[in-house]
Image 1: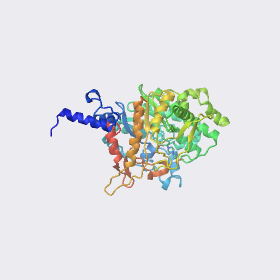
Image 2 (image 1 turned 135 degrees about the vertical axis):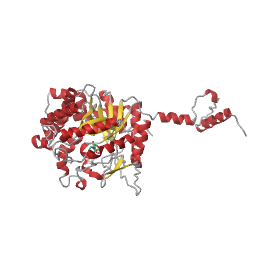
Image 3 (image 1 turned 30 degrees about the vertical axis):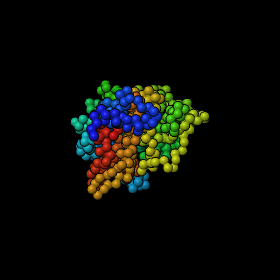
Image 4 (image 1 turned 180 degrees about the vertical axis):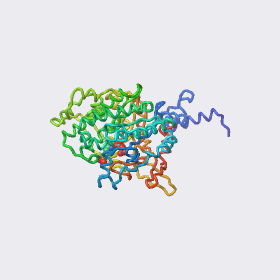
Length: 496
Ligand code: GBH
């Protein structure tokens, strides 16, 4: 039996109405009068709704001590992480960053791996002690040349270099001389180094992050002693270290502005605490905003507002940091963008009738986590982090400077890694980020942490975050399934 094309269409629509329950409800409207898309069209529309804004930038991130190796080459000075990782018992399996991924030598082929994944931006960190082996004093030309070669090669491959100036590898000399971040002198030295390197790389690097995750290296390095330099300072001392970190950031912003060519953009990369509303009611949404502002009071909040919140000063009391009005002006020097590292919700919050105005709920024991015990999996954090940073401080340009997850990453005999967990992680987190951009939150780019497995600080080499698997015996890089995912994601600029 033959039916006309038109009949087929009508049949199609009837079936569609039926499956939507509309005919049963008596809504048998003449097909010509309604504008339902056919299922295929509807599906396509849905896909395009998963797109990121045009020009959105996709990239990967690394950090010097975690990937470079070559710790004794070309005049590099010792850092607090060299010292710390060599103390038995500080790092799992006593792993150190001595060789790491040997990216110092292998960067040309690593850049090719990125290009192959459609990467357009690369976030790396400059090792301060390659530039000034003692933190201050005479610069080391061979160190400068390395970052010139690296950035030249990136540009030749159409990848924009985004440089982080401090990813926790403090020159040991500054620790020995000034007790590191316990002293204002270290903040000043950082400003000088930042100004110097931004001038050296000025024709190549247009985007700088001052410090990576002030909250992490301060709290873990000087608070609970888990990270280098392994100190556990009393509250007053710890608050002063916090203050020196934000001061260092501000001094670096000013120094880069004074030394780099105009048009250079400056920001930071902070692992801010991200409270997520447990249920999206207006009250809880407000509570999450209040919580974000207060829980980041010593870091991002003072950087954005130029003052410590009243509650922070009240909470710290006699142990509050010592600072001047001038310090606060420096700390809040205007930025071109804000970078945020987002891995997990700090907690699920709800509005509360208490002094804080919010309450953080305890995580369920069964809350999913990655192989990193600290990483609670909560994709909503990648919505609420940029959303509330934009809302609280009117930031006009944001980058997700890190987001990623660690997994078991089993290598099959035929050398595949089916990291279905990581692919699922990216799809879920990025769905939330896409929602934020669709609502107009000005996120300009995303850096996956990390390009490849690397020295995961105190967890050593056993905890893998890469899109590429690194065989540490041969240093071979093997693409995981997630690298294939990233390649399509970056090509299509949408959640795939
Ligand atoms: C980032 O930190 C870092 O910037 C990057 O270098 C690192 O490789 C990546 O994430 C993955 O971890 O030792 O149990 O006390 C993310 C935030 C804050 C997560 C400190 C780990 C230590 C937990 N990090 N936290 S624990």
